Image (cartoon, rainbow, N blue to C red):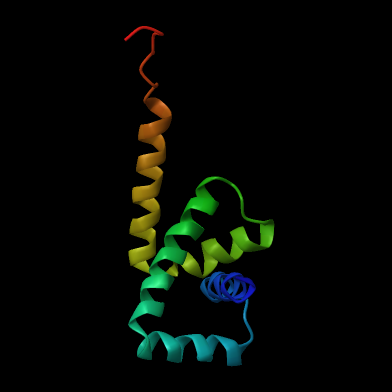
Length: 101
């Protein structure tokens, strides 16, 4: 469990360009050779976007997100989709419920 958390943290730091060069390269090599790790990276991107939209990133993480993470057009599109969903759900009030069936 601790190893999985450490790996998730490393992937997040990779996406935010917060790893030393050697660790960056290690992750890049793994991405080329491990399809399941590539899928994990896609999930980590989505989670990072969610954290950004919820305001859960530190000031440094937010700056790195905006400078490095959003440098990729595909990630910009993911962010735009996330923002649209957030707006949709914030504008949609839940239907009132009554106690009877």
